[in-house]
Picture 1 (cartoon, rainbow, N blue to C red):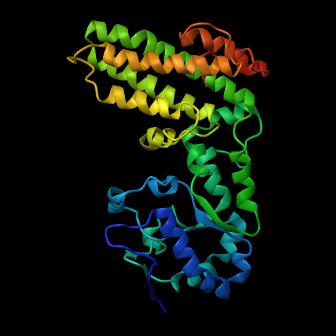
Picture 2 (spheres, one colour):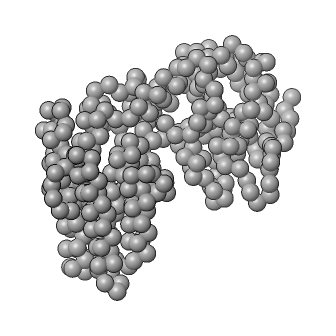
Picture 3 (tube, rainbow, N blue to C red):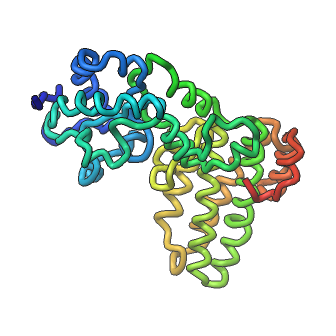
Length: 327
């Protein structure tokens, strides 16, 4: 029999975050699941991770117009999930259809492949393209940063068997150092090419479209560099700036850069320096950080000179032979 459970501390106009709602919903549902399917729950991992603003803790009032509500992921190895699915679906059907002011997302039509029963291997393969955690440096380089961010975000509420958490821990251990340094090299090269060299030339030509693309390319490389400096994966572009701001290494500087350039017209503004100065300021701070870390001994703020210095620290010959801008 379906029922409705009240969510604790539901305050009008102050809705909980998606992560908090998911955790509270699972806490309310757990006794029923443990009573109905204890053998399945002993093997399952439960949490909320993957795609969606709520998994990054970035959801807000605007996010609630789609795919929002109480729900959680229940991960099992693929073979075990296939065998357990009929019994599992019956147990899920007995859970509340509503929690607080929201309809449950565990109804089959509402899952969208993001919550409910999920095969552990398929979840990680979707994001990494691999059947096992990456091992070699080249395997790591094939996985987009935003995909690594997505499959390691959110929270695991429970994982008695530890199978899901084994994968998660391997990815959260972060890139091998050679991969991180190769990526830092490439980001410096792109920042120099797009922001320090091509952006001012585009502005002098009055080519607004090219300037926009150069600035966007610089900003994305700069944000990726901030995440690499902090040993974090850069998320989907929509959330990259917001989640970079609190990071201890260059996070506040990146936020200041983006605040200044996003408030300034590319063409027809008071002075191109209003765009170029924030770019050069951030490059100067980046160069200073690289020198402080012993990653570069190049003088000055021209990041094109710093990239090859970083690459000298890479031991993997295959990575050293790659295009400097590639990573």
